Image: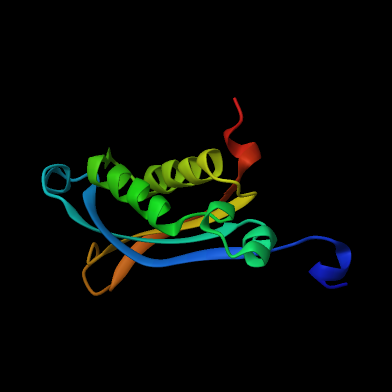
Amino acid sequence: MSEEKSGVRSDRIVIKDLLLRGIVGVNENERHKRQDILLNLELVTDVRTAGASDRIEDAINYRTVAKQLIAMVEESDFFTVEKLATEVARLIVTEYPVTEVTVTVEKPGALRFARSVGVTITRGCEDFQS
């Protein structure tokens, strides 16, 4: 049965290759020098209202999301990409009307002979309830 026929919607907003600079890592040199951090996000939300109205007020504003992510990463000093990914997911699902978010955090050039290393997580609202 297709998602549409079962009544489950899977509209997605995608933010690709958001290149930021921040502190993340366990080595001494990683703790003092900002490094490139690449974010990719997929937000699961219902875009029907915005699709019908064509009004930004009915949509998730991508610019606002990006600004919050930039501020978070630039101020970050996490030891692991896993923690950074978790905090990005927490921000998205607690601040925006999304049911689920998939976050990929990568550190380009972190490993010799690898273009990038990172982690991908998927979290929903239930993962951050107190």
